[in-house]
Length: 449
Ligand code: UDX
Image (cartoon, rainbow, N blue to C red; front, top):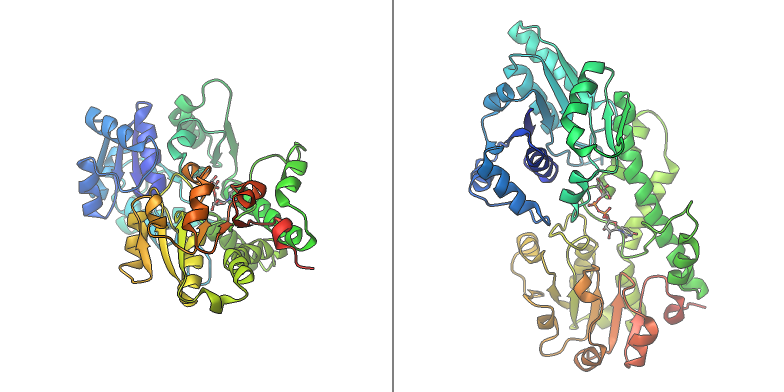
């Protein structure tokens, strides 16, 4: 089939590449000429395991191309995906200007019947707005053409996006039109081999499904962070509690890891946007507001532990802190809404300097923070400790941070203390090496009577 995809961001690029990989002819459109030019020359704008070779191979085979020419792309596709960004507005609701601009472009240029697919995460009701925008442009041209707007939300995880796209656990299609659903079934048939993963429904349910999935996952995390904060106070260890509850299949092992708060491009934005949608329908979502509030507080928790250790923020003035991790999670260079950003701001505010290392996010951090005297971005983990620093904070659970040489750390850390924002270490092992240990929700060293 012929597929056009508007937006070569995370979702558009991965989706387009995977559709080409299974044999479709795909053209990806973006208004950013430099990005398009880069992609046509094998420069991949994001880091995602497995993506680069797949883009290059499909581009070389001619199944995947990149253009800035919207009219050409609309003439090419039987199916046109909208996969542009929906950044949060100032009030937290999703900003639809890019989605609706693409819809108008489709209406301006379409010359035959089309299936238009909303792939971006968009508030309930957006498909109707997209349809209205296309119709308006067709009316201006005095043209009558059939089109269907389908909601097909994305469930990709950063760091595993190619894998998730090639082996989806479900494919959600929302449309009232049997013919549009048939087109989508044909498009996704190569991903739907051994058992049927296709879940079809009405458009609004499909739109809400995406938000419900992310809100549920964010709720699990905030719930565990809340339990961790209680565990700290009562002198329990949340890691034991986690193991004690995860074996119940109704709870499950996934997404019950306490930590420094969730970040990324989805959870913070989507939880707020869904709460906003509810408010627009005059419903106050007490739970979603709490999920968000717990996460906001949790992002400041590591700094709070540091304050407790040092007896106040003032004692951090002039300290040098080694920070392991900058990305919002491992296997990505993405720092959107990352907890590291809050911690850095707090440390700088307190007058501390930071030597930070992240296996992928160095350039992103450089772009965000620029050159500053109180931040040194290191090329190697070992460099964060070079010459000795006062304390170590671990904020992203990259595999390479999991088993450090504690003997060496005891030598290099002047204040002999580790703040473990992802509970990677065994407190007893750390303490046996003569280091103080602070984790998330681990009451043994944090007990407040
Ligand atoms: C998420 C959803 O998982 C994905 O299905 C959706 O399409 C987009 O949003 P992503 O943002 O890539 O994907 O990251 P994810 O792996 O879900 O992690 C989100 C955040 O939650 C990270 O900051 C992570 O560190 C944190 N997290 C995750 C926890 O703090 N505890 C956990 O148990 C799990």
